[in-house]
Image 1 (tube, rainbow, N blue to C red):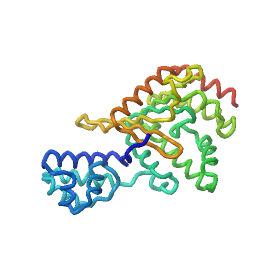
Image 2 (spheres, helix red, strand yellow):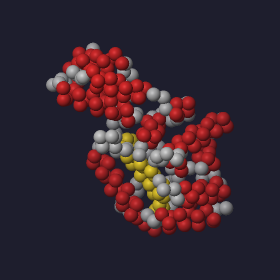
Image 3 (cartoon, rainbow, N blue to C red):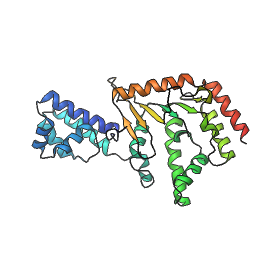
Image 4 (tube, rainbow, N blue to C red):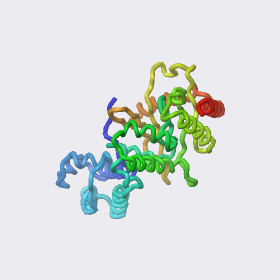
Length: 294
């Protein structure tokens, strides 16, 4: 399944929707007609409305405000949004290590209010211990120096701040297939520490961890790969950004926002949750397997 290129950040998406709404409400202009008046290509303007990456200057937005008959105060708000788009993120110092397009996911992850995660294979990055992550990195990035490996771990640990911080941590609801408990990453000591970490961190009020046991078979009637449901907090007017489904693949990732796709993945996640052990039984299983792998 393929999807349109994702929006890189919430401010960018908000800016695009704001501009589209102003065009539709204030004028009868088409995208192509606006592009002609701005002396832009049609593709450049349509990317702006879709919220896709692209540089836009303050003077361009001022001129666009005149074309779209936007009041001055709203033009100022539009420019403020554009400034937020241009802001640096905490992970910019790791740009050389972040695989192509994964920065898009990291921005969405940082902006999310709650996440539903299904992993049939590995512990997700947000919940990995340093040694578990390091063992995977040494295989996936075999040419990295020790310094680069250390920086990758530092990046991952900083990502995890969103679920461990004291103020407004992101809610995480994870369903992990039992196979991930028995697939050795690193050595048995690494696995035991990782499983104990999951059992411990799952006691936090914002984190729920369930294990989907072998005995449930295939709750959806077929094998389903890893996915994340990212939900965003409503603004002061009660309007929330659209839910995004992140589907991870070896050769490329997909970002789905269409209502049919979102509904399908929500139903799938609900079915998987229903088939999983409850949180107490899951925690007991994690600790039991960890004791087996000292």
